[in-house]
Amino acid sequence: MPINRRHYCLGMAASLGGTAQGQTTVQIAFDSQNPPFMYQAKGEGAARGVYPMLLRAIFKQLGEPLQLLPMPWARALGGLDRAEHGVGGLYANRERLAKFDYGQPILTETVRIYAQRGRLKQFNGLDDLRGLRVGVLRGWSYGDEFDTARKTGLMKVEDVTDDRANFGKLERDFLDVVLSVEQTGEQVMASGEFPSVRVLPNPLTENPAYVAFHKSRQQQGLLARIDEVVAQLRRSGEHARLVAQGLKD
Image 1 (cartoon, rainbow, N blue to C red):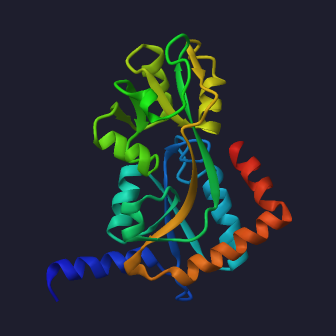
Image 2 (tube, helix red, strand yellow; image 1 turned 90 degrees about the vertical axis):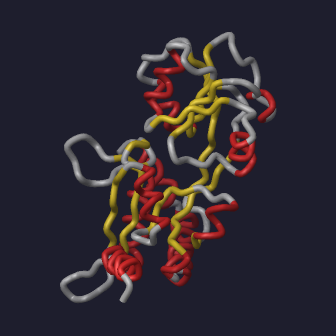
Image 3 (cartoon, one colour; image 1 turned 180 degrees about the vertical axis):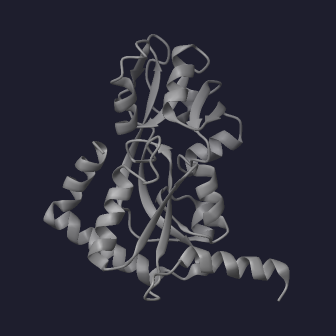
């Protein structure tokens, strides 16, 4: 077979994995630098945080073998684009929906805006960010509206690999605002290392987060089963307990 087709098939086989009994192992990648939602502690190989904890519980209930793969977010997205694995904790936008299959949200994240005290007074819409230096995480989508504004040059967007680095740039006046998921921002602010920074009352957006697979993987059946388990966990209150536990992981 042609070399590119062969590499594609080998990637598909690797992403599916396998157990000693021949049962398929589902591989799902996570951001290794986004605590408390998904991360890899120094010196540890395991994925930790809210999304890994949720997915372990979901797949345990499904009775399906699961391998969690913590890695840099850009690498996780690249592997998803090549159908090498699924990804957990992914936002949806038009471009991604055209390539990937999604189930129902496993969690909804609130993205908040952080600024130096005395700078940006309020946020009522993206036009309030016009001309500002905005710190974001590399590889992240913050929704179609923000992504479009970024492409048109409404604001000056700077990418980094983790939230703490963004807050450090904001504290040192290298940025005007930072975008961060609420619980992550709270955790970073609790360190006391960024006394000049405050959170604005109005969020940027509410972003549902999903498990996704490349459409070529044809995992709609698995995603539907995941949806059923998530609904059961929500009804029983176990979902809220797992999220609370994952935030402390």
